[in-house]
Image 1: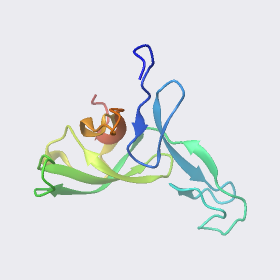
Image 2: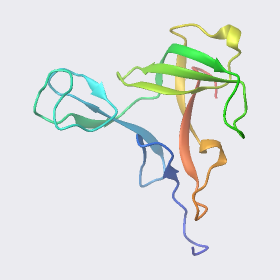
Image 3: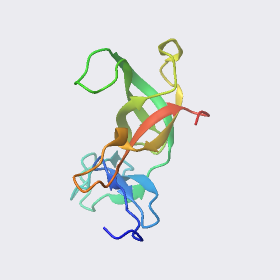
Image 4: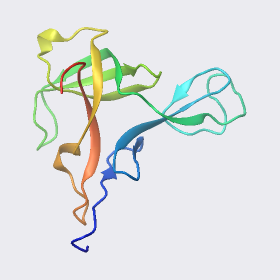
Length: 142
């Protein structure tokens, strides 16, 4: 790779998209007929059976904590404990991820959270290109 070339990060998850300017976003699909949201492109709406394919959109970065589990045992190299969460984003998409920056005593259903993009734990592909992942933090935190 040439020294003057800018390395564009790669998505660590199939719903992460990297814009031309290098900024990541989460892509989802919304049915124009009923408003149902899904994380994958389909030929017809799974909720109302509309034959018009759901339209792509970039989801916002805020939502609410729905469910969580504190994980104390994981694969080698994965730091524990960590908080695995299910978050309902304000745009209608539900995502699974990791919640950081909160003590377990502060967990409650409905806790406002914010989506944050990160370096996917420092992961790189075989050419050394970094991956972009995401996690959640309590809303208002960095």
